Image (cartoon, rainbow, N blue to C red; front, side, top):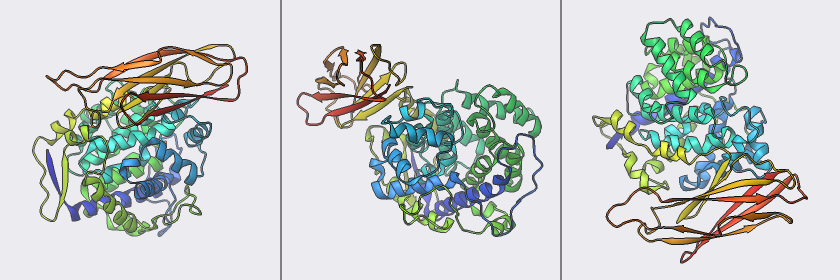
Length: 499
């Protein structure tokens, strides 16, 4: 389906997104970590005071990644390098993800390995950048949210939360109905995930006329077994949904309802503000609240001594984001074999044109769920133009001397480059530490497709048994070299095992 967006309306919504994020972060910040139900009336800060918020900070770094690298090179590994170079804090999952990458563990393994914070809030709080760069394309926004979230949340509920919020916010640019946006967002995550179940519980409470206080208590009780404290994603994202539903289209009421739930209040309030801004634009913001905070952005989580040119105001941030959004809309993405199926969006100076049946179209697009099937626990993927290879460490990255360890390689064709009906053979060569040995096939055959139809990517799996040597280091690097007959590109899989 083709969508046309009036560019000035889009720009206004982007500005409202960042202004709402700033308002919510400043209003919710003083109450962060509160476990009891609150009775918030408004700001607890002085007029003109903007509180710094990592929820917004990290997105300024992602903007720099997009500006410097272009969309075609933005992926989990690229963002991982930006993490290590420009984001100093080591809080919780931030620190775990960075420490794992420094050991050589690639995403999403960096977010899975010994990470008891993988179900927490660090990823869904930084999705606005992906939604603003991909308005009306929830699958594309969610794909980038996965690349982002898996670095420090791996295959946890924190990644599902990021998918949900990114899809919700991207859809909000073209769907004025909150419930429709929620429906689209739910279609992008597994129905049996705690994230989906918690959001559905929130909706059920609202539809049954249960009070906001009772709904909050119900959500909190349902998720008491996940996480450790006030920072787990399923409940906090549900408080965002609660605020937007129970706020019934009023900005102040939406914000206060979310903050009153307690827990990670700067995150919930910031996401309520940003999502409300995308849905309704600046016209829906109360002037006393916008005047109180102004236009400035104050950062706390960025090494500005090495990352120069960070936006200083919501206005500057908006202009730089909409500039990049034009490039995004122009289609500077990889994966053209699925890109077209997600629909086309164009900017116009005329009135926006939103086709009928858009909700059904968004929900029917299955790319994100297919992409999630490749996001396996304790795994990571390397690729070339013709094929991609996922390494799966069945029981994690830890090893002990003399033991056997099972590895699995999953090879898939990349149909957008490979001549899809042509079979070809891959050769696997292993580079091992001294004293290590490996058994398994050294040749992998990828059959060609029948000419009568073109199905999804061909997938072949092979299992290997690694015998660990008697001398084990703290870090042990195994490299799989995969080459193919008749093709110039190769894949090198650096598998780091922890002694």
